Length: 143
Image 1 (tube, rainbow, N blue to C red):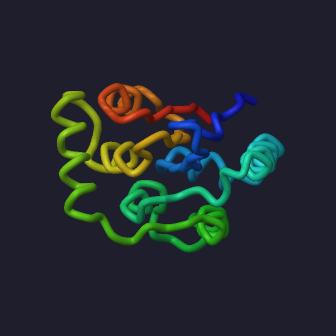
Image 2: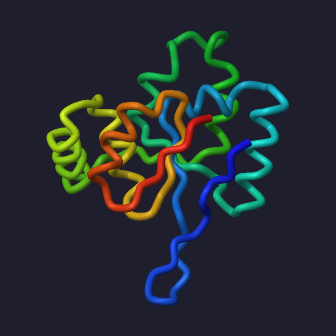
């Protein structure tokens, strides 16, 4: 299991890092496996819990059928769901997409939500890493 950076030090002040999940992060952590449980325990110990999940991510990680979505729905109850996308966040995501020249609108919103100094957990880091290259101190970690 990879360790996840916890804190960013700026001007000798402790700044809490934010953990943001994309759809792959939600799906992976929602698995009822030993690996996902170990990662959740580690994130809690590092005080990165609960993670933030932008509500637009639900479009990608849910299928609209309660039986198929049961694990994700159970897991999402432990997360902080952000239900609004501010104009500023949307504009920042648009800029990241333009600069990276790749990634979906949802990927760009996830990276922008992690700024500054946050970490995004994902199962598919390629587009997110391209977006994070242009972001303010955002780390991308594969789960």
